[in-house]
Image 1: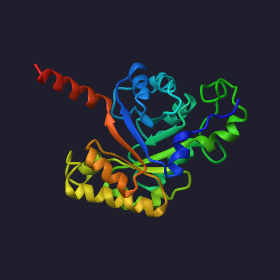
Image 2 (image 1 turned 60 degrees about the horizontal axis):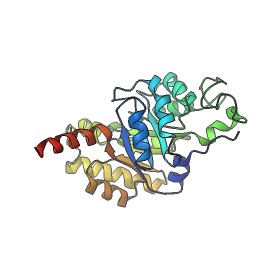
Image 3 (image 1 turned 180 degrees about the horizontal axis):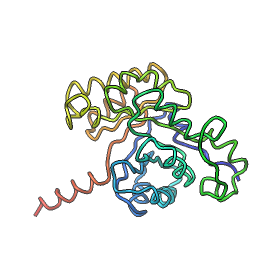
Image 4 (image 1 turned 120 degrees about the horizontal axis):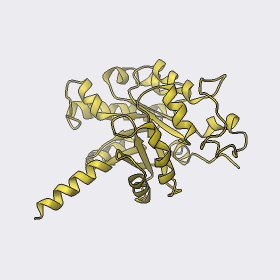
Length: 253
């Protein structure tokens, strides 16, 4: 059996815009529904959502019912133990939060790679290897794994070039919420100063030839970031959509 291709990785490196949605509700029903909604990618969030690492596998299986949709996973932190488990479950793309330095990025890269290039632990009978059926998994896995690092502080922005150019980093995702807090403007993601930093970061990444991503729940802001060159943009969150729909429906009565 051949190693499955990472469509998300291939597409962002071909500068094909990818529109995504955040999955924060655990279980397999919501991820399956989101996969069927035809976004380009669905991110399973284990950092801020009530989704434990053990739930990732069923989410991946659910999203996988829609072959054209890519599943991304955000681990709770830049932790090689978490990476090892999530990668063994079959995730091919990780979005790693709170990267502030090139050293942070390099540590994440090492956790994605088998020795001697990295420190990822080896196990043969995993979903990633299709339970031992993928040909030469241990020597070919790296080419289909994708590492996105999340820059979300002023320190990270200052170190953006070094982070983005770290060998093994496939793209950089700008996190507006924590960035706003880091700038002393907590929760003001649409503040002109925060917006200016995000725009500057996207522009810098485009100039470096590094795929840039961002979350923007405001459609106008999302379209503007895309026009600047952001290639993978999260435009919705499942729980936000559900809450709004519930309130809007109640308001009708």
